[in-house]
Amino acid sequence: MPTKTQKAEAAWLAAFGEPTRLAIIRHLATEEKTVTQLAVACNVEMVNASHHLSVLRDSGLVTAERDGRFMRYTLVGARVSGTTLTLTHSSGVKVVIPLG
Image 1 (cartoon, rainbow, N blue to C red):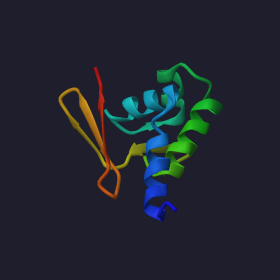
Image 2 (image 1 turned 60 degrees about the vertical axis):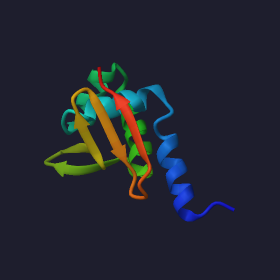
Image 3 (image 1 turned 90 degrees about the vertical axis):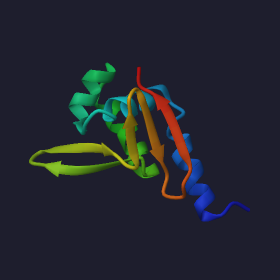
Image 4 (image 1 turned 180 degrees about the vertical axis):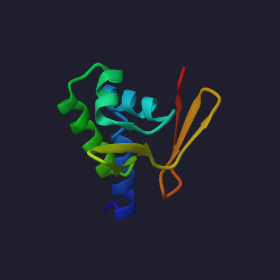
């Protein structure tokens, strides 16, 4: 039976497995953004971007902070080095994504 940590890791890793979410992650690598900015950047409807951001929040990949009437989204455990994004789960599991 999987542990709580293993389930959290699996949910975190599963969040990467969708093209729009992967695009959102790449756009957030450079700076925090609003759902509107991400929808435009990913060429999707705001409702779709919002849905994917919800999945990313639930898995612990992004956090959101209110800025007036907007929510600004930021990656958690992210480090950019050159053209590579490294994301690290709290358990130590890492994912490396090319940005170029």
